[in-house]
Image 1 (spheres, rainbow, N blue to C red):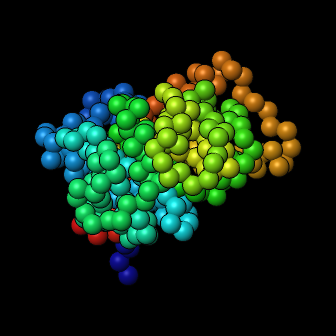
Image 2 (image 1 turned 45 degrees about the horizontal axis):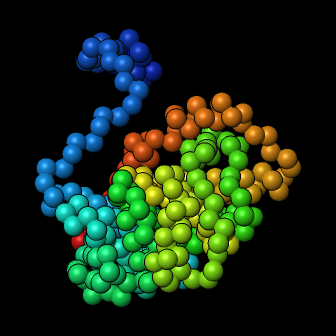
Image 3 (image 1 turned 30 degrees about the vertical axis):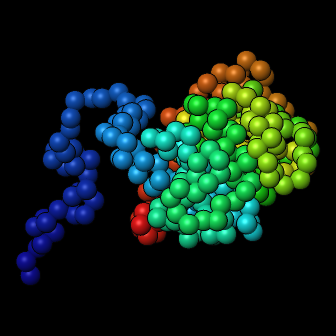
Length: 282
């Protein structure tokens, strides 16, 4: 009988580090701890499409996170050409079914100039005021998410309890003047005033709202803020949480609270959603 024991390498020998390295082509060592900047869009049409696609994806993601109760909730994106106009979801369309072609363009008077509607009156009242007060804000997000609602009933801002919650340390406010459903721009203006220069505001007895320099930032910060509310509710139910000291919380905010970080966190979610639900871009 022929001895085949040495005719072919064993599987463990074939996969040995030495044999792998002998065929692996390496490039020069590279130190890279962060992402490349996203290149700017080349024209207004490309920028508009970019914002619309991410806005539609944000609604689908919010549905996956359970931020889709009833008729409440809206995310807006400022139009890059008509900067006093914003894109928003049609009232009554479930977040999980929104496509780019469903989005409405609304002007500063609350009139729909692209799409059929209807538009959520509260969406106009709140978001029009924020977009007017904050030229730096490209997008704002508000829904009636469970943990955001629960935390809002306590009438206070969040404590710096975790690394993640430090993204909002001294960067969120409290609006404690609840007067029912927001149906007029005066109420929206008071919310915008409470938001100030921050990235988020807790609406007492109502919920939470985030705003940012991109759709990605506003949407990711909403997801992160609801998560921070959840974490503190659990921690306080379990015992007495230990706060992160001010100087450490301040440093951590500078590290984890940046808009670019939020952009790439959102992008990591976008890729999987678009692959699973490509009709969102229609």
